[in-house]
Image (cartoon, rainbow, N blue to C red; front, side, top):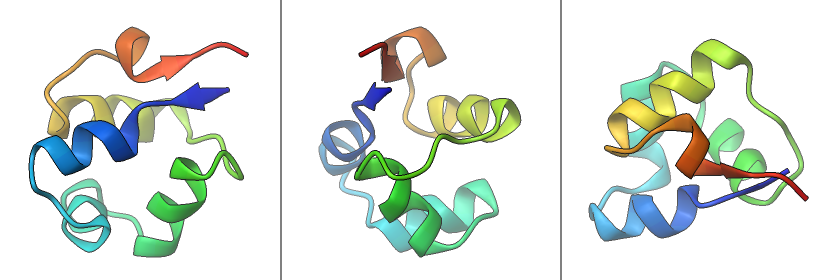
Length: 63
């Protein structure tokens, strides 16, 4: 599953560390999700969408 996390995070001028802190995960988790190496849990996906000011549907794109 592809995602727009990096694009939206940079548009909001957030570092991986800052986004990770907001979502309660490690920076490595954000990095793995951005690089399509890890699919987040549903609660994390909703948290990411909320902090990136979008919806889960717009954040994640099916392959």
